[in-house]
Image 1: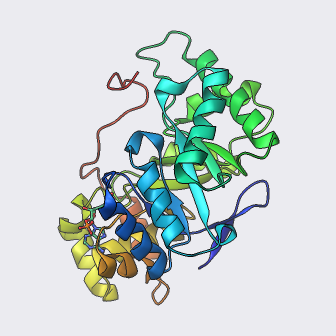
Image 2 (image 1 turned 45 degrees about the horizontal axis):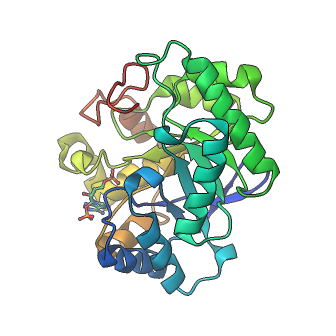
Length: 281
Ligand code: A2P
């Protein structure tokens, strides 16, 4: 699989396998084994998904060497605070039984709607991330769901720039301002919900375009991410669909059609906004 290169020259497989909503039971072991069998070498996890142990077991039972896999973990909001963060990272490594993380991300910025001192909280969190990186527990560090102004605030005191920003990204919701800023700063954008959690698959405009290329809407959305130099993290529990989502090398979306997809109006999404969010602490 093609790889992107992070700012620190670490390689990252250009499509990742998302694990949100997988249960913390044996079924997840099978899903992960199938994903690795299908060719995924990049697994995106998070403590908040509540399934780290089963994902870890799936990875172990896949019989693939640790070095061949790229594993991402995420710090949950409950674990903020310098010491807590270091312990949370170690707990994730233990849960996944994976020796180190290839990438560790702040799952959500502290919400300005909840914290007046959101900048300080994020900047302190980042200090702990820099420690984890310098000490080799994690091979790369980054953030999720940071908007431009939140990144700018973080960069003010950062010694090491985030290498990744994982954001919601699908047709109709490109978050262009964040994308442009990240490109300017050489921060790789990863796409969560690249299929709009499945919602994009029924959109007439995308069905028409996918027919033109003789591919599925899922493949069109994934290729559209890649041609925007964004790293998609599709999820599927089904082995045929896992394979389908990796099989995107044999077509290219024309510049004209990229423009059309880039300019699609909002067609639905999670509705989560990191400036106004009060759902999580
Ligand atoms: P399933 O697990 O049954 O395949 P996203 O990655 O944007 O969060 O979307 C995930 C949703 O899209 C899941 O409901 C998943 O269902 C579905 N999905 C993933 N890949 C495909 C595909 N190639 N075709 C149809 N549905 C898909």
